[in-house]
Length: 302
Image 1: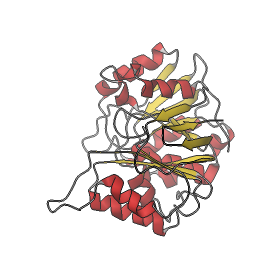
Image 2 (image 1 turned 60 degrees about the vertical axis):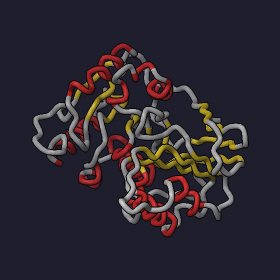
Image 3 (image 1 turned 180 degrees about the vertical axis):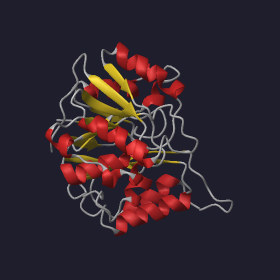
């Protein structure tokens, strides 16, 4: 696995919206903070675009802007303004030739899971699952989650802890970390962006899904063999979950626990990776160690 160069003062971070629309105003704190951190900021036209629909631009506009940022030698990191939906519509048309020769950090979560998975599967280059532009707002730029983005981009090794959970399965494991949004990973099953999970640490999170849909997507990952030979499993936040008028009968963590109970590797529930504020920066493709005991959970880069 190739690790892109860490950032230096004066490097350029580009901001683009390869999926859903985002008003420029919602990214201003992010832009100012990145500049305060010592970086140059290149703002793409898809951020605060004149789009009249859900997307930040046409497929061609979003594709061309992301491609230009991939190819631009002065850009050392690409921070996605937001996720939403849309990367799947352009992923097959992106040319990673220059990126393979000169890797740079691709940063984001949610729909950006498509980029993390595709690059991991096809190019073996690390990417960064981390807070995006809106996370900087309302004082968010001061919290440890946004600060974890800064420290990771600058080369600090992660050393995270979280509280134990009653569904945790104790143990120690090490491996390449992969994962992201459950809905997107299920969506990518069988495609050229599908992840390979054997001997890896897999993390999952999601937002706004019906309980029965979580059940269905977990079953899809299970039936496609994603859980069989893992080194370990990390279950993050499942925020703003929805239930049917006639209740599904199980809470989200209960649903997941039921389907993975048969496996013997370490499992952590409640890790701070999510669509909410608690969203630590994780390097997809990098090596991590996971230690779970009755007192706490530790995820760190050795």
